[in-house]
Length: 217
Image 1 (tube, rainbow, N blue to C red):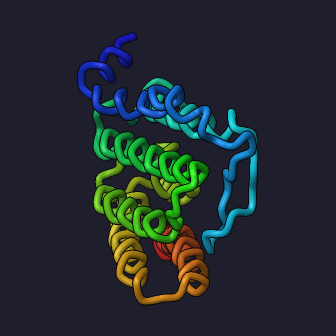
Image 2: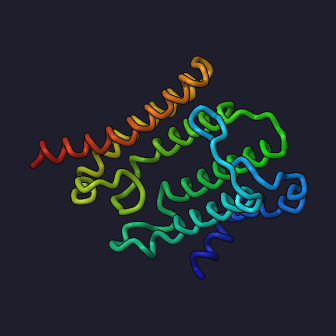
Image 3: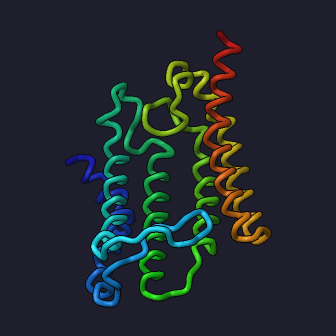
């Protein structure tokens, strides 16, 4: 209960963002098709459909689930290293809620007939998310839920700090590249470039962590 009181008192804006899709349902339900486009590939093409109920409700409920998970991390962290208001977790909660709300709004808008390409804003939006999260990454304390969670970082706090310091710079650079190259590359090339950048951002910190482990052992 204390955690929920904290959310309503300190993060009331997050609660409002989480409720927006449900408030909108009575106004949009009758205008949506019974079968909605719900998935797009890396090139912005529809490659998945689902029922209206799924298309309207899945992301909002997912958003609530992720928010509650991030809110209650201190209670499920076995080593109690996380606090509810510990940076960057409050920022991460808000950024994820806002991003998923934007994705859901875009998805519903497309199904309502609006001509909005996914590549017009989703990929640059992900780039912005990488910049914001990368900027805070170096402040993350060792834990089992957020950050570069590989055996070598989890077993060595020094390895954790060095890996996240490097990853912080890498993610900011990766986010900037996604934003800068967006207007310069064709849709197909940008989709492939996006996938390559995400793979690099995921693999390089893990490899660097292993390198630190090998050189220090």
